[in-house]
Length: 220
Ligand code: ADP
Ligand code: TYD
Image: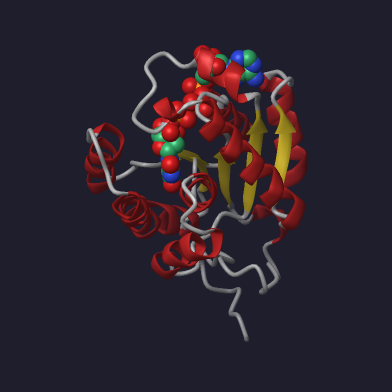
């Protein structure tokens, strides 16, 4: 496919098309993943600050959420007393499609880095694997709604689920699923990292600054 890289704001959202002409200046979509309480929001803000200090525009977003509709879905999915697992997977996918179209894609198109606290890799790990709905089914439900707006890099903050749970103040409906569930989520992330080059595991024993240093080495 021929790509006109002279278009202002051209962003390579398709991994098979090289970033000809823009080199390291192209903004990227970076997702932070891990079990509940692994440090994603803290590390995400620190990464965005460091990118800004280096002269880049950077935006932090969270899932579920990040748009008015997404925040309403967040309330439903995290605080409904009960929720069918398939309703859960589709609600996560719905808020994600909205976030991709309304925020992530337009930000990348204007050269802003997007640092996301979670992405569709959460759905693959939590709903696909830990809930047992099937990794490929969940991947395909999500990719159908994302129009190619997929993370360029995925960092898994690998913290022991017991330690991570202790760090949490008031766990939500999914955070209360217990240690076996969180252990299944962790195993799913480690397995994804074995198979996908863009999924990078960072040891939870690193300090926040060390994690950011390591991420910058990979993404810049
Ligand atoms: P998450 O977004 O994954 O739920 P948070 O960023 O809210 O996690 O972090 C949970 C708690 O762990 C916070 O109190 C935070 O200060 C602490 N924390 C985050 N990263 C680290 C780290 N690398 N080492 C030690 N504590 C951390
Ligand atoms: P989050 O607010 O990131 O929680 P925490 O700070 O505890 O990590 O995510 C909310 C919960 O929703 C968390 O338990 C993980 C879960 N979740 C899924 O199960 N699937 C998903 O696709 C996403 C985005 C989150």
